[in-house]
Image (cartoon, rainbow, N blue to C red; front, side, top):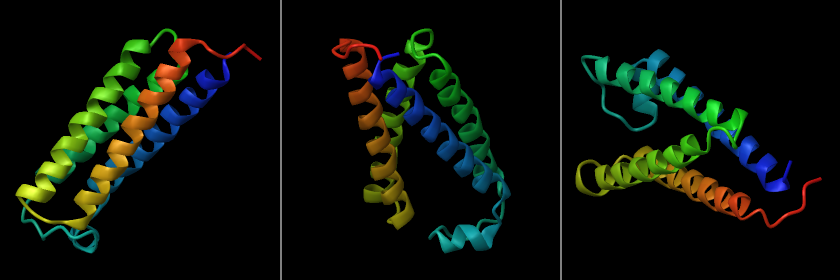
Length: 132
């Protein structure tokens, strides 16, 4: 296994765990928790729970990609696309709709995760390292 492959697998796993945690918080958290993070109180939790469900779904995809990067190379590219789209959405929302600091921070986190995955994936694809 190439060292970059190991790094890629571990980072995808970390992203999967992070995304799973965000999904659980969105599903379980009440208005008090959401207000703490800067979101206004909502009468309906439908969209919050929908967002949580999709985070859980994406966490499975990220985990699956981490299990075998050779077999699921296309999922890694999908992860990069998802993180780029999420970053554009989050920054757009923050700058053009509502200035919630957690949205801005989430944009930086998602963007950072996407860049790291892309760079490590590209390095791994170059196969510059000798297997250990």
